[in-house]
Amino acid sequence: MSQSRQPHTDAYSLILEAIDIGVYKPGDRLVESELAERFGVSRTPIREALQRLETQSLLERDGRSLIVASLDHNQMAELYVVRRELEGLAARLAAQHATEEEIKVLREMVTADDALVDDPSALSRANRRFHEQIHLASHNRYLVQQLDLVHRTMALMATTSLAARGRGEIAQSEHKGIVDAIEARDENRAQKALREHISIAFMTRLQQDANKRERS
Image (cartoon, rainbow, N blue to C red):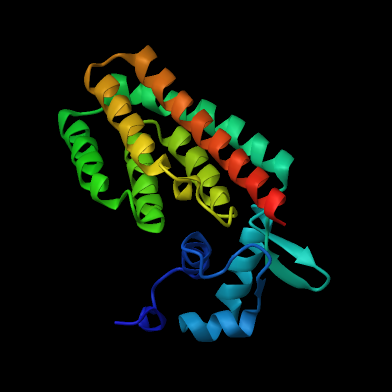
């Protein structure tokens, strides 16, 4: 069944998912009538969804139009600082509160994702699922809500750090270390491992941006 035939799907979630998977990229203009036709919903929920996304700074004004926002260097740095601290806290709480079943799921995710290291797009989606699983394993609803907003904003980056040469294998190794620490119930090690994982991803992205500027 096509997406446009799902009458009960929330317009906000549909637009958000389209941004997240790259259907709409930073700088793309979003038009009410086109979105309504694409998703098979009326313009009123589309309008409300666009207003909500603008409030969350995922969309921005370009004259009278709304476009998918983009992040400048300072915004990206600010985002990674917040992400590093929140993700680290999630890992720490997961080491305290994760059930054996949740830890097993994390372990299985890492094993399955090893097959995706040569596919940056697929690995990026799997990476998000892995991190979301850690968020849930923290068993703290308020932290999960904040991290959800952070990860939505990450969608405003046109590329993934996992596209850098060799980064997929390294990230997978880091994921294994995070799960090891959670399974060992070592709160400090889990927090440190995830914070370092995010820091390395940030450094990788900075290098990607530097290389892009050099080529332009």
